[in-house]
Length: 318
Image (cartoon, rainbow, N blue to C red; front, side, top):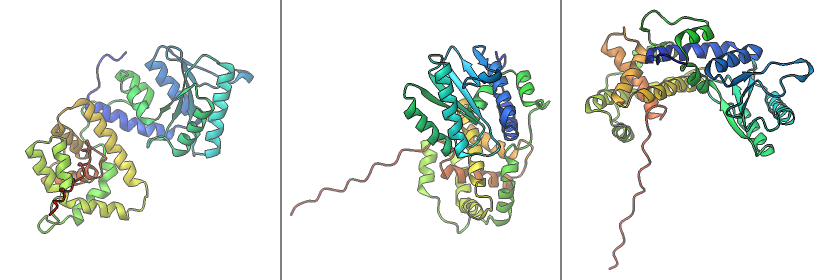
């Protein structure tokens, strides 16, 4: 049981280390990590080992209280045929040898960006074959939600690293956006003569209830957002933009669970890029430009509902 809730910087550290850990795990190593985590998290979890010709009877783990059966899939490369085969084999084996022991089938995987479309298609097909079962996804976000509820010592044992002795001062996301910040430092021009602030940005700021001071700062950054778009339009790595967006989205959601104040969330997102040792308004503005790009792309902060369609004035007969 967790004796102390992790501070925000500790949660950020855990997320970064967990991402690195999952990137290096596959096969039995990934399965062992999952089992160690779940045994630490839930006393009702049974890690099921293979036994001779019986194998694991279609399960890598079982939570008896929740009638939940888990199956791990952590290959080095995604293979559509192998995924379909794995799901069908585990389900068929579990239904035959563990009939009545579970009602939920949870597919455990390592993909940080979410469930692969191939997996979702295979699980949809399995749902049709086994309509009596509920299917759950256990990916990166679920791993993070489980591990941050452990004590620091347990987390260190699982991840194989120690927490820093003091609050992290370097920007966690800096390495992901460093080339972009360098691009902004070279290409961002004075705001004089730039296009006016787009109206949707203002509407979204107001919907999220930012203070007037925060909105003024954000408005300074918005006209420079096209510079970020130009960078991502020309970047060589086709998934770089999506991976960076996913990182900001995950961090925003974590912050939104802790803070109600949007100004505080924005400040923490800037800290996430720059760290608390950074100085200089130019660097601050460049970081804010990056955030406003993802703000406009709807990766962070709440999105206002679409406006009601305009109703034309009734025609007056003469």
